[in-house]
Image (cartoon, rainbow, N blue to C red; front, side, top):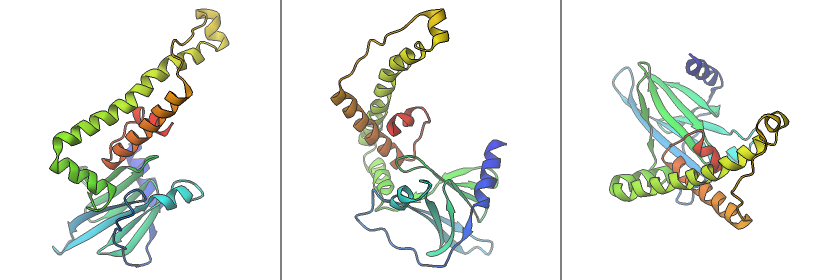
Length: 220
């Protein structure tokens, strides 16, 4: 119910496009742009290609920090919407949702509820990561595992410090006493862990992976 309400709200934000042509992905854009494709057949059986284009630089420079997703139909600008976005298309909806490091969702949801991730452009960061996963699955799994570890370690180190903060609240102190975290990290190590978590968050965004608890560590 709540998910459907959010989808309807997102659909209401969609604005018509201006018909401009889709610019091809450039070699220098893997960190600044996402481009995904969805080939579908329309009612008369003719194949059409939808494309989702998200400019990360424009997103971070926008007033609200949310940015926009742009929908192209057969290479022409068809619609745009603030993120998170939901574009009605043939047979369903394309849903686009951001994270601090990229996208956590770029999926086609059919009217029956089936979900399919869109195909990333081969030259994009997401496309290069998907190619690595296909060509070197073992290496890809190890990279994914290492990214997970880089998020779990800061989380485990943070828990005792959060408990210490809670035990400083007067009602908690009166009933349970105080608690001092046994973990005290030097500044350089905190900085290193933060960089590692950010790198892990970016790598997971390239795979459109997201967990609200773990990836909040990457955001800091």
